[in-house]
Length: 356
Picture 1: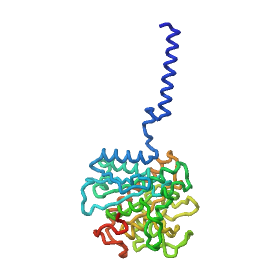
Picture 2: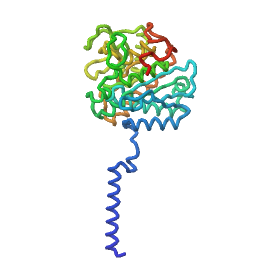
Picture 3: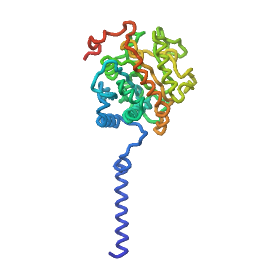
Picture 4: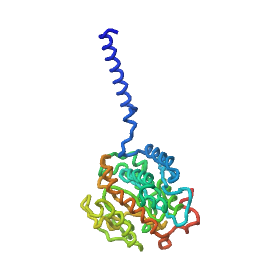
């Protein structure tokens, strides 16, 4: 081949290869595009794929199940992590983490991914992790509001778009309330979670939110509450225990215990009674405590509700020890019921309002 023809052919071939490479990149088919960033947010499809993969890869430690569907028919996934997950053992307590109840508060959702990986990859090298999996049944729900999350926008720190479910209902105002009987129409996500926590006797729970940095404990409501701040505290009979477990998270956190404000409202020791901060009715943590005998604490873990993904490594570093320490409190919590407020004694079946 003559040199001039060879050069022309090489130029054409180079142009073709560059064009094909560009097409693959635009279509998301490049090799680099297939590799997922280590610290990134997972949408519902990616979260589902992740949970299925770890469940397949670690069958001796995991069991994946769905407690129900969202309004838009997305599964409300839960991953059970424990040694021998298909064997129920007496005095092996059930504890749960629920994240992304407000769809636009996204940090907790992704921290659940990192926690899952941490627990599953360190059983043989970390004595604390091994003790947790040997003696605790850990149920992790990365997203209670997957529909709201799909509407939310990364980088939106103070907005409300995606906070509620797709019908515009705030799920953390949708549970039966200890102090008020009037409530909005119950949503599918709420019903699914109520069934779940009635069927499994959880003794300890954490619920992850964003917009502040504080551990908030029951009661969230009080008689004749107003919507304004600076209300008096609304204390449960187990206030000393709630203060303790909230402090376990706060003081194991990188900075929550400092009580630094996000919006001018400081929290001594990084903890607060919910109603003393601001009262709300129909909250999930009060429902857990009053109706199901489960001690739930709400963890607000980021001033920005949906921070950029590049900040995720810092949030994981700040919260990792807290997440593990709080789980370690579950064997210390004893089963109990509060003031006869349960809808039915345990073992009598699903309450009438939860039946299909």
